[in-house]
Image 1 (cartoon, rainbow over the protein chains, first blue to last red):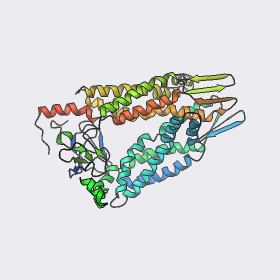
Image 2 (tube, rainbow over the protein chains, first blue to last red):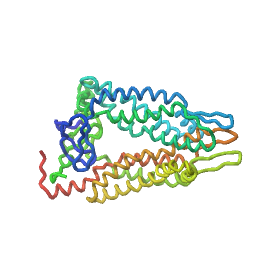
Image 3 (cartoon, chains in turn green, blue):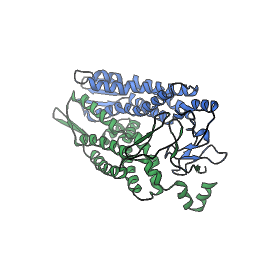
Length: 224
Length: 218
């Protein structure tokens, strides 16, 4: 498949929800533009996007590591203790004949958040260069998918319900990870809200450039 | 809405879902690659109706065992007791626990069924070429997209309840056979949302306008 011909002016766009052709205006930091036909937000020009996102992403990295290494919930009942981590919850499903659901829990609560944070860290660091290299674009393209499947906030509501259920039978001991995860929920929301992908796309090295810089046969494929 | 609304497709242009770049496919081609981010491009998501219907059908089929089969089995000295999702909601209902009971009711019962109905409505109206209520329909799509992930709440509730309550021989809780079907409903409806192309909602409006008015493209 060959590369399309860009229209030349990147302020000319089509709304992804209704395909209306339009021009994105130059926006002051903090301002946003919406599609006049379907009201989809087309662009929000974030203030000081890269620095703020980097700070929040670094915080998220630390919190993520802590959240997955210390116990999240514990309980005592008639002198017996039990505790679990996030991964322990997924592990228990796997061990008890619910392998697929166990993998889904591991993916949405552990793997996807790790990708969401890790990719964002790499993207922001790469985007701090004057000309972000090609791999920044590749990661940026897949980043929204990791956001859809990263469900820490949903998990936390689930944990809250589980806590109340268990409290009927036993004394629940909230673990350190429980508090860390709640903070992480807000840090991740802030990370998403401070990042301006359009600003990075405007500067990133293009795929067709990278292709024409590469070896001859891939060049032939790209232009055939 | 401006009277000269023109879509990218009418101009032979494709916009990239990955990076937003607008580009023109090679002459005679209907598919291509985004020169900026390398994403595969088409005017509309490929086979959007078929794929969305397929995921939606799969979700609807799984919806039945998800609600009929137990999601948790509690074993105590007195014997084993299995609960479906709805029984879980009822069990949570107490003078102090009712707000959580409502959360589970909304997330596990109301959202999945509303999602299935909303997607079916969007698919049918778009396939019939409806030109009414477009703004409400695209807003509905965004709500379904935003709210869908919250149905996973029950999966997490059952996961952590089962992982913690392991106090054999006093009491233990294990996940039941309904859980995988319930998780499948959530995943299939999320995939259905992702494969639906909201631009299909507008295509009938756009072609109507293009037919009735001289279109200028500046």
